[in-house]
Length: 364
Ligand code: SF4
Ligand code: SF4
Ligand code: F3S
Image 1 (cartoon, rainbow, N blue to C red):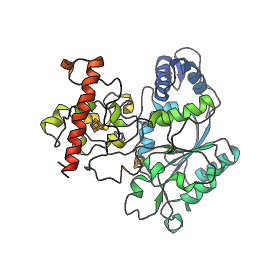
Image 2 (cartoon, rainbow, N blue to C red):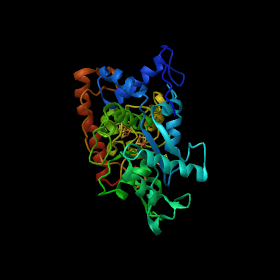
Image 3 (cartoon, rainbow, N blue to C red):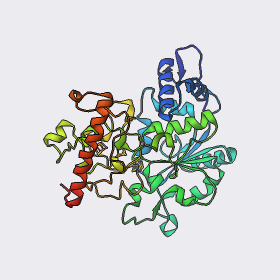
Image 4 (cartoon, protein in one colour):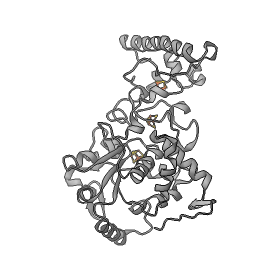
């Protein structure tokens, strides 16, 4: 696909205005924790005609990971993504199908050996030689094993690809396995972008990092980009001051729930889930993330939490004290250092409430 770069200050990419485009680049820089001085470099990389070829494979998935990417706006990612990457093959987005599409995939892999990014959504079933997910008569297990060694890097998008997700939930009848486990020991770099679905900005920022710096972003010990997954959701949650003050919703729809109190007692897994959901809303819409809508985080992006822990079980609180600079939810208590001091004291109340509940074995 040809990149539609124009220089009339009006439209840069696919009808995206310069203003929206620069806002997008700024958001990407902020997502990655880069200084604003990097925005022109990011913009230059995105508008470069050198776009990485991408082969997108799908295993056991629900299409939600692709859908979330296409539903992003400001600017619309469905148009932007086609100028950002050269999408050579995707079963969901291919215009063609059947033998033609398969032939195009083989041709593109051959032509772009060592240069293409392989994106995989969905888990890979390994039981019975992988027959539970077949593409064009071939197990996706075999296709992945053939394709990944030829890629520059592999991105496992979504919790299904990163950890096994829904398909791997007990009793895992098909032997659904995460991508990195299939490729273990083969020296192939695998980036995990977990989430069900993940925030599209975390995926796009990873691709843009690769475009801008010609290398993958720094990863944690689980293969996740550190810029997105190094903080617990609980650290920056807007309901955190309520946790610190010991104010919890006890039941869905009760007064505490209506007041926006902490959802810990309703099973919120924010205290043990690493992701940037509390700071980077979905679809560029403030308040568009589970906890803000009144739904406890179920740890969809955390290995062995989402799809493993019971929905209403209490999370393990890793850090009971609030993060530095935390604001106070009760304005009359004042902000700044005073607010922070109250926060620390409040944390003791919240932690004590949690500990008491655990000690008494109550799941109230
Ligand atoms: Fe669907 Fe969630 Fe799996 Fe993505 S991670 S394919 S949204 S079930
Ligand atoms: Fe937010 Fe959940 Fe932590 Fe409460 S337990 S502060 S709702 S992340
Ligand atoms: Fe998932 Fe929890 Fe974020 S459910 S989308 S990790 S708030």
